[in-house]
Image (cartoon, rainbow, N blue to C red; front, side, top):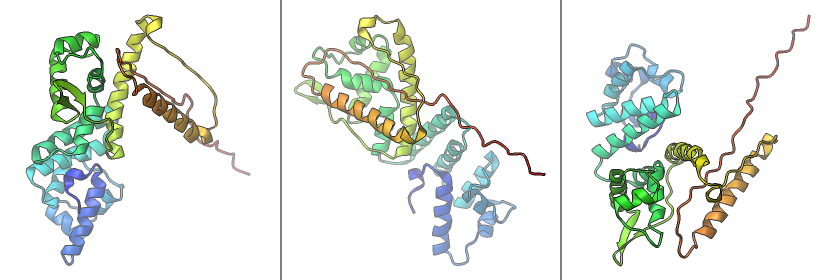
Length: 281
């Protein structure tokens, strides 16, 4: 089975663990796991695997013992459970970051997922990454802070430059910082979480930009009734527009500014439950 640190769903991990153990240990059962974990219910593992039960803080520790996890992996498993059972996106993001920190501490290598999550989740990383394309770019934290209008502090600017180079996004060429690549691919779950943090910051900046001069920004809005069956077509059209704009503007020979485009297409209505029909007498 895969290493624990590769999982983003603890029920999948439990399922893989159980069937792997069944293959290697004759007679292994749900009841045996409960005994080793110190749990009274003989089929509790199955209920959790099937999504019929969640894990409490106490039972997380019991499960870690039954799984035979080291302290580092037990901590990752705890955050993984809390991540999956989180009530809202802020809580999910918090535990996902904790998962990453534990993983980085307990693994020798840093994989592509870690790199891209760091890059995607922070708007100022993207801003500095594009800033290096400007003809007047200077790798000076004070200049970066001033050029980006206070989007980040000087300390953050220095840290961002260092991290973008350390992570391999920026490299030196002919005594100048240049971009290393434009696109990475990672598991959808991790991209989704990273982009939520990113889009949240973009929307905050959009609100602040309402006070900027009209000739420097563009706002458009549309409220319209649609058929839900057309959603895939509409979303694909928006994606195509962004891609085409990106392809065109990326060919710019001497850019002098960095802009942020944000697109939101969100439902204002909610589905209602079907009406309850009166019983026939």
